Image 1 (cartoon, rainbow, N blue to C red):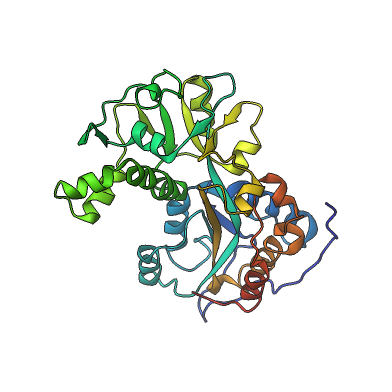
Image 2 (cartoon, helix red, strand yellow):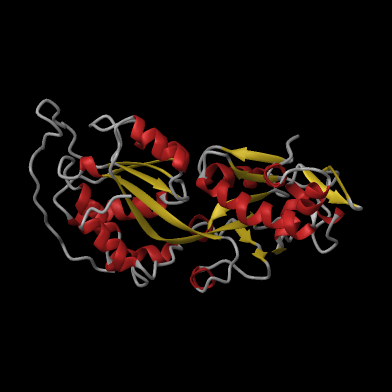
Length: 342
């Protein structure tokens, strides 16, 4: 795609107050490893096409990025937090406590989380949510009773899956991907297998049963990955029987070394996510600190550029990397222009 050279001007620096002046001239972004590749593509193009420095993009996970975002206002804090989950009340409370009171929510599009394994490894080609829960849940339903998970191989509970030891590399708790994994895979599997109802029938409250449903087993069978997807990829490379949880975009950039499983009989791709038929999809966001607009050069321009039709639209470059364009993109564009806050 050819992007016309664009120019923009801004004040050299602007004061947040009579005594506080920013000395930073580049946009700083941190957060979700899922949003990272999209943000990096946009940042590079922005640096090439605008008279602003290329924004600095860091990873670290959605929760970690939002925590940094909520540290306060000023040049020593980031301007944008990328996130693969919506902002929580706890995030907003921390922001408010530290003086970050005006936040602009930007939904950039949709993504799916996928289960992928080593390309030359066993054939993990088809999963149901129940399979993932039976493999990774801390407590599962066996012969009508809730027990500590006894399964050691995938074939123990589904003869169509490989007779190899269960080993899964899943996103750590600070990643937005973990929340989607818990809600749309583990919770769904817990309900489908009847384990959740059995827990409630056994005397658990519904809240306690939900917590038990998303608890994963340890002992090296499930491994939390606190880094980004490159760490998960490295673990898969050295563990041929392992499976990993990835964002669709990352998988699509690594099809030479990974093969992906279907979920519920549906293959993950931009078409199935856009149609709403792939069951493990989620919206992607970034959040802007409004107090930094007009102070950090190029901040608003970068945000507008990110969600422009030529970048985030269905024919834009981000779609080539797995982003599913938001059908309500025009409303998001307008919200940035008008600096609408949560």
